[in-house]
Length: 270
Ligand SMILES: [Mg+2]
Image 1 (spheres, helix red, strand yellow):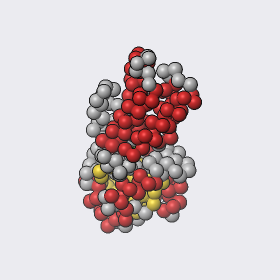
Image 2: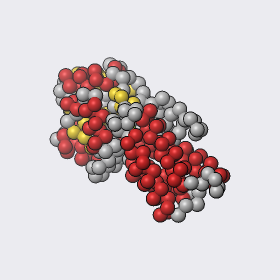
Image 3: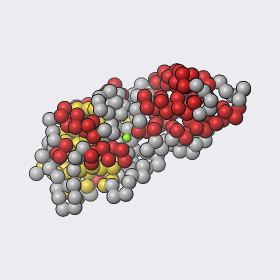
Image 4: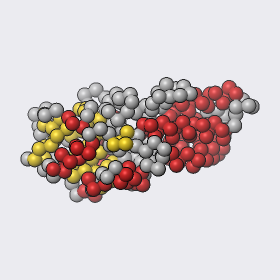
């Protein structure tokens, strides 16, 4: 067991209480990884594919423009324009799994008049066309957030075990860790293919079972309110919001414990 310290202050479930920690559970996108360039590229490609497949530009230019605007908002483009400069850290592209993004896309397509079977088929086709842009094989593979390798060394030196809890698939999680030489630092993972998936508190319990660690001896670090709420509901005593994985830092709910650089987090053996 170890204590985690944020800017030198030991962390616990409440002021003055210090938690005994055995494992740290990390979200991936926007926490372990700078995924924004890849996700922005992916969402822009999905938007372009949907517009091409819906084929409204000549017959119904107003609906074509409406589809462009609705999908831009649904995907969380920061500028909402033709050349968005970022992704909303709490939006569906950033937070949700592929199948939820696909259903959201099909729902938007129905809003410009397509039937559900046509909308769903276009969304499936658009996603299949653009899937290669996601993951480590993409043109813009996600990079580790600054200072991550040193943090993992500190946690390892204090005897802390690490795991990933993400709504990416197992392949995406493994390829990110492998491509940056981080695999040996993570003992377990919980992906969109596990049940239940994030943000169900049962996802934390499932991962804790894999590790053989009680939730009360875990810390969880994520970049979305859904991560932090899930952790609290699962009985995790140390819940930390990470804010430096996005161009526009996520606004986490008031009162959240937040960190801005991994250098702020240290561990001491108890
Ligand atoms: Mg995230």
